[in-house]
Figure 1 (tube, rainbow, N blue to C red):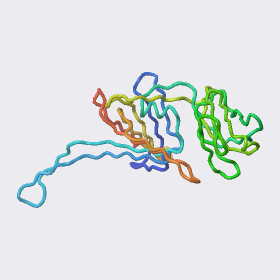
Figure 2 (cartoon, one colour; figure 1 turned 135 degrees about the vertical axis):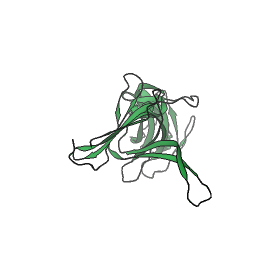
Figure 3 (cartoon, rainbow, N blue to C red; figure 1 turned 180 degrees about the horizontal axis):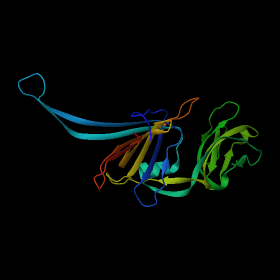
Length: 249
């Protein structure tokens, strides 16, 4: 217990979200940068003949939050925003995989041919000039891909040239796949949130009993970390609980 009547807050704090269904996995926001919790109410003032109001009352209160994080996980997308169907395994991407076009039959299979999904393009390694995909019988500057076998076929004139191939392929050993349909409006995951902040052993915790996600921002940035943003709104649950505030003083 603190010996003072005040406490300070330093650092980004801790943010944990958990779905309201039984056995829901708690999700801690990784590499948290900052959290902001806004509690705002609308007020109405009553005026008489004078310049100043003679009474004021508060109407609605709105609770919104925003978190910025440097790490993200697959369960976060589904448990807190989409509420879709997940399965084990992922679809990965191979970018600029180097291959030399061999002599007859002027074709090769890519490294992940066994689980090949989709072609993402081919460029000449020496120049970066893209080749054009065609259905069959490629000529110079063209290629044909057979997805069932992950095989790329080129023109005889391009024999021995190096190319960079990009494509997607499935992997059953890592990750997960989230499949989304087109659910009705008003259908979304509901979760609780715990926000903790403090300094030197004292602080405060906020429990938001029912929340829904309102926005995800997933950025990339040249020569820097991508800091994702997660926005949420809070509302009263079935027991009429909205916010619980726990303090150390």
